[in-house]
Image (cartoon, rainbow, N blue to C red):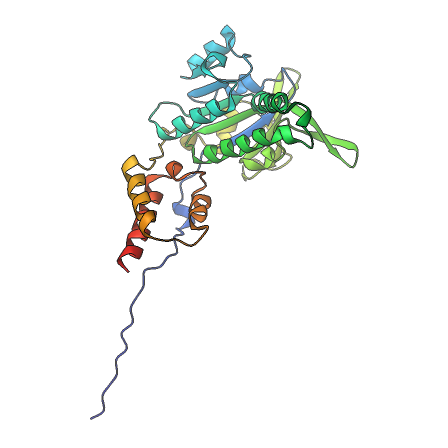
Amino acid sequence: MSEVLKLTVVKRASKLLAVDPKSAEPSRPKITIFGKPGVGKTWGALDFPAVYYIDTEAGADLPQYTDKLKKSGGVYFGREQGSQDFATVIEQIKALATETHPYKTLVIDSLSKLYNLEINKESERLGEKDAFGASKKPAIRMSSTLIRWLDKLDMNVILVCHEKPEWSKGEQIGFVPDAHEKLEYELHLCLRIVKEGESRKAYVKKSRLLEFADGSRFDWSYEEFAKKYGRKSMEAAAKQLVLATPEDLAELNRLLEIVRLPEGEIDKWLKKANVETLAEMDQDKIKACINSLNTKVKL
């Protein structure tokens, strides 16, 4: 009687992590607005819900602005609190991302001021050695860190900027935000605010959102924006990012002393998690790294 050989198929756990696209929660709007002084950029932004207002220019400490901010359930972070220091502002965003609070909208007014102050500080430090845009490097680097944390932040975001001419082949072709060059591409939406008579209009310069087509325009107000985007996600309570605990990091470092990883592996972890250091990784990602290392230890 012939033997029947049976093959046992071992089903391995898939490493594919994608989910049904319809199960992904809608994100908060992250927008850049820019325009000339006095067109109503700040005035419109203060109507957004529960604003955490970072005033880099000391331009919104007048009663009409603070009254409006208080009415929205917002708070004020000005020069006395450190609004003109780029590193301090980034630390505020990290705190908003990781602490429980009632705020729903972050406004930085203006990012242009913060960006250019950083350039001026570096230019003074370099003195005669400032050449080939060297003084811009810290401001660009900190802008990248800022954007990375804004991506993690579960709040509506409005970055207010001045405007500067946009040039092509020696001719002015329009206007762009006065900040690092790629800012208009970084967030969901880039709007140029203009004043037309008694009304204020938002022109869509760049958009990733179907509700805001490139080149379209609408009244610059929270009511009109929320009507187009949807109030539900904009007015929901913020969810906090849970960072790795000191105990998690200690366990990870202990395992890293045992397991010899290929060169550049940790850099891949950081890039995938969109962070600069292991301490900035959220707890779930750190635990995944710990589990992976534990598996290697047992082999």
